[in-house]
Length: 304
Image (cartoon, rainbow, N blue to C red):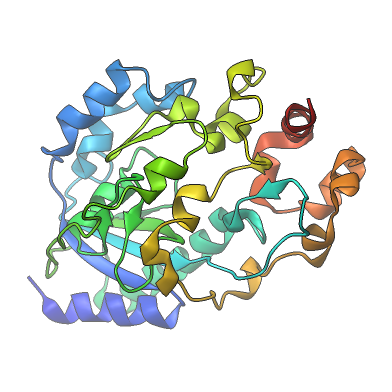
């Protein structure tokens, strides 16, 4: 193993604005396999059929990058203490600014280029939520946090308001070790979920407000009427109530800065939202994922 290369990666990641960087050995995720299979068999992924695809690749990064030896996990902070207008339909903090896919991919490309310049020819791939990679499992293995009862990765120093990305490399590095679980007896996230999507360390995605407002293509089931807590895109409840997020600090990424118009949108503005305004306000935004039609569906459901 080459510790200098590991230090180079972590230093370069920090210079590019990443919150944290951890490294783990690229190998089969033996512990995750039975849990993941059980989760799929219980249909807790809802309509996210893509979760069933590339099962082997999800559990073994060496099938994604031949000769892979290391998984580099990176965290990028998106926390903000800015808020929308009181009473307006809510969207998750992560969607306030530019779509994180664009921002992180650019940073990863720069990081990979630095490594090739400093180390030489290396084979690898970068991933941001767009391939069969179990990002939370890898970040946990590399010591960046533990999987909380809300199934989010939690870090004692910074909470959980961050994105996770990976580089899978055919380079042997110095590997980090996992940290211990610090959820203790706390059940704040489970107690606060209005749709009952959470049980300790497990999520029924088909009941999650984020799933219902983004992933679900059909009409939102009537059983969730008056349980959406005014969320129109995503949901932050299980993170907002997590005691560890008292340590969250606002991000320093200009592209994640909230759009002023978005924060100032009143309930009436949302109700009268046109497709033209949607395209302007949410240009290069993660909200585009639900499309205008999907967002209008969500808004209508909140008003029924």
